Image (cartoon, rainbow, N blue to C red):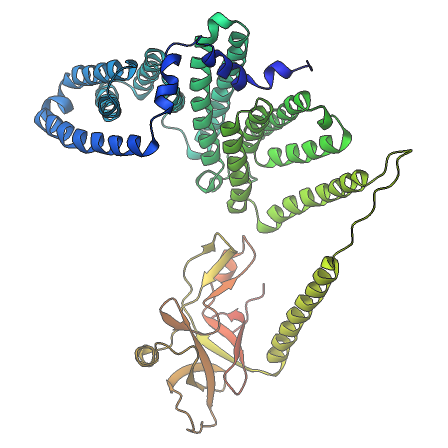
Length: 540
């Protein structure tokens, strides 16, 4: 047996224990699995339809005593006890078993109502945590224990979460709570593996397996939420963070340690990873964890779940890692150029690693005859041709715009800038042009038109004012200019309804009062800049 093989398949060892009848309730496992899913679904639907009105009537009847008195503790405990007795029984009818789930939820909600009303939120969360663990110990159902483990992980975080913290400092505390809970969950799985080595302790192993799985899945969700848009907007680890630099470095170092620890665990399970190229990839990912500290714990859980063949944990951690990496785009404390530089640098480091791995894979061992090369498909030629065609089209569009800028007539249109930021494209000003009521009438009559021409009156300074909707064949005066309108968001706009600029330059563009255009005689226009109240272009 290879080293570490005992830690690679705890699920298989647990299944052997169930098959051997070492776990309580295993005799009824085959009977439960024999139930068709359609029967379970219909029975559960009927149970919920019967339970909801009944419980609603009871709670409406006891409403005042539940919200103000101590009846919430008595009712909640009795409902939980009834649900636990039903679920603990292996011979309960299917309808009664499904009815126990709404009873369990109702009892938990009723009990939590009293706890959070009368106690501090930390003490109430500890009480709910103990209740979840007690129910998991009493009810021998793996799927329910996973749900109770997830609920226990949630109450663990709520119990340690302080109140009255500044948002940015509070996010740092959340990071510590989530990673502390992750360590507890991994320690429980280590203890579970020790229990698996002793056949008489297989029941404890099954309990810890289900509870730790739900616990860690809830923490994965928490790490994904902390690394998402809502957290990153606060600039927790960015250059604008209010945290002391030493504390910020401690968080980043902890994330790197978690990532490298996960790689060490994976390398112990798969010896092929103990090579320079996989190590280089691990170092690049660890560098990203210094930039995204929520990523380190997720990579640890991904490695743990993969090495121990816990597919649910591995898949959830992988999806959360991708989510956190994608959410880094919305980290507003970093400029777009900085974020692009980090990702481009990581890609530049990974590209030669991938190239070296591919080249070594194609090498022929010494003394072996080279394998016949398969016929090459013309894919490379197609990619090259497509790239050249795309480059040609892009340059043609650039040439047309440059010609319009050099030959077009300069005009200025009054605007009203609104909306200071675009999360998808950087800082920008949304432009609302003063086009007058005639365009609104034209919109009603030409709602389906893709391109509408209007006539602008242009004075000696180039300031343009709307005069009328253009009528085909009607000549223009010397001081008039055609310009095309485009439908946008149920209205009409000139060329573009937004002006993008470098992050951090918002104050400079607040002085914009006019949009500067270049317009051709046929009405084709291009927004080239913004100008202040005196028609002076604002320099970027």
